Length: 197
Image 1 (tube, rainbow, N blue to C red):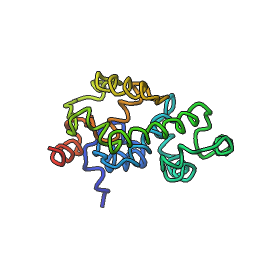
Image 2: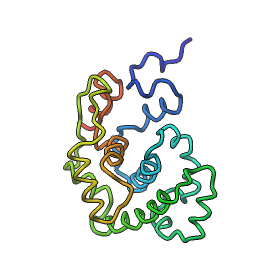
Image 3: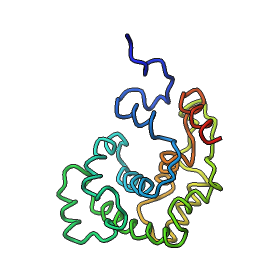
């Protein structure tokens, strides 16, 4: 009997790899209302800059271990010794600027939690707590950035975040379901619009 996965229409980018398929089917575009998961995606998205997202997904468990399960309070306190340890960890992306940015961003993340009650309150506030649902027919229609990602990136930069430009932020918005960019013929488009509608 053939695998049920073959009967589902998916976004084309997810079809060639089991890790991508699982990520597409279970996570991408699903609204995230939990701060630690938001922080996890911020770390991973900034690590991905200039690289393939599949590379990051393959290293995700290594990141989880290296980054104390993405606890922003712990990450914000990382010392120079911890930075050296991360730089020698072949299981993650060993880029000094990305690593130091993640530590800085953890501290800024905590400041937002203090100011807004949670990071989710802050970032979901840009869309009045309701996902932006796009209606793309082809992958070529999906933008790399939008006015929304420009606005959020600009605001986060003013708050001291680094390595989170508009393109990275748009990827983040897609990942955490603030923007639903599944193609309209993808089975997840209907699932998510019913869930959030």
